[in-house]
Length: 565
Image (cartoon, rainbow, N blue to C red):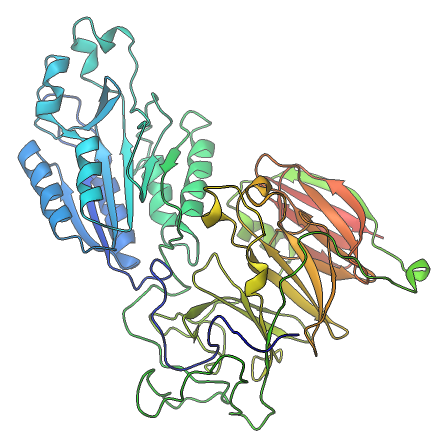
């Protein structure tokens, strides 16, 4: 056990600014353009509606939005110029465009309503080049640029051009061969393909995006993944959105259960719940930050709570020895059913199977919205924010990280979150000793889930990319003695990267999978950490729930039921 050299102060009231892109606090600016009323081409039905829907959602998650509809060339270029000139350095910039688009000789062009192009060579003079837009954003010095293109409805121009691309009869934009650092581009359809207008007031893509932007606590790349799944399903596979990125950080559209605001959160520090106002961070009456190697102040007539800083763990299996090994009985899984799901219908899965939501709504560190927790649970801890909370019959758990994809600090509470009972700094667990060059920003192993049984803390850590990026050293379950922080055992890697795992008798049921990698349910020996069995499933296990002797398993694309014997 180590109680010194803390990387961060924990549970202090002097709220240090959260690192950039970790919340809704950074400057956010959006330019949203929708063109319907084309003068020299087929008018469109939905782009102005799409632009308005996207603008509304972005406004709700804290963007300063500039909305333009039915723009001619002069007003379109002027809006872009004005938008780029006002962007603060280090901010987030988002440009959304819906309307006609065209590709010429590998270059993409966005088309204003007054464009008149009888021949291909006229395109650069009559349109806005996507390359020009990207260069402008790059020169603005922003930290993240998100470019969203819901265009390429059937190209009405090139069919009339002589001896050029009109002979191919294809539409669609081109995936750029190069783009600036910090750029994320989302295309409503795959390269060279046209997008659907849809039957409603919005295109399938914009309708899905406007909804998903509002999802609380979700990394923005996951937002676009969900949008892609919805569009592919709603169009019967005719339209498959694509993304291209050179951004290696994290960003969340909606940082919490409530929509973000701008007021700093007053905090308490392990104090009894009350309705009285807490001191504003940084005020003269606010307590000083906790220094490295110290314990938290006693504010509820309980003993001070030591911050246990975990030693660097082994990144290979470290099983324990169990003198009662021959007497142990482990869960046996027998599949009952497997049913394809709609990917985004998790709420339906919960309701149909009588499964309670796993996570609580956490207090919003920006707006001050309390979420589901009492006011004595701080929304900030040093320069971290509260990113995940859950509980079982014996313990409450709160995880803190720089953003919603991180979480090195685990705090333990009484089940009602009335009193803090333990603090663990898992910072040394975050990064494997070897990673693939260029993937360093993807392999931060966050605390996913934890439970305490018989004085032992079982905790899982995993990152959100391929195992090869961390040389296979990812997704472990670890057993730690709560009272001392002593490491009891560590599982083999690649066994647990889902939202949860389950303790059942002498076993732990958990799961691992990622995109093209093999996907399994595992049963581990909870006394030693050794793998007892594994069961192949169709895609990565995301959520497990045990009701009676029926194990419900939610994977990316399939819902399973197993009988547990």
